[in-house]
Amino acid sequence: MTALGFVGVGIAMGLAAMGSALGQGNASASAMEGIARQPEASGEIRTTLLLALAFMEALTLFTFVIAILMWTKL
Image 1 (cartoon, rainbow, N blue to C red):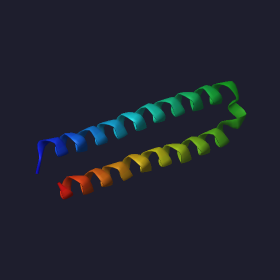
Image 2: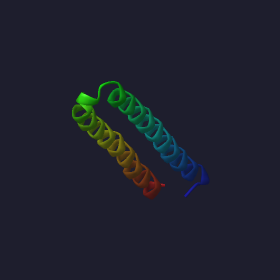
Image 3: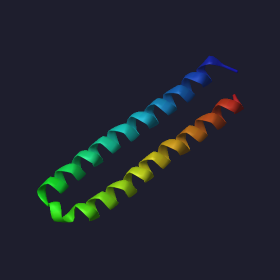
Image 4: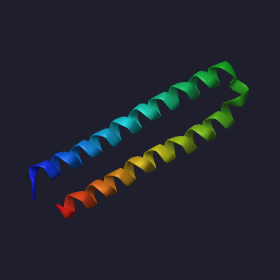
């Protein structure tokens, strides 16, 4: 087991978490702005936002699984 492998797994998880957090923040901010501009469309905006957030979180979880697989193969 090499230290460089552990660094690679840590970097992979860090980048995935950071990317997901930035994407979720931007999506939430845009949804709040959209709801503020058109309150009558809040239901559709909220539904789309929740679906997008679920997909972003799923990508982060897939990265976590891949990182665990990388860690066990080192």
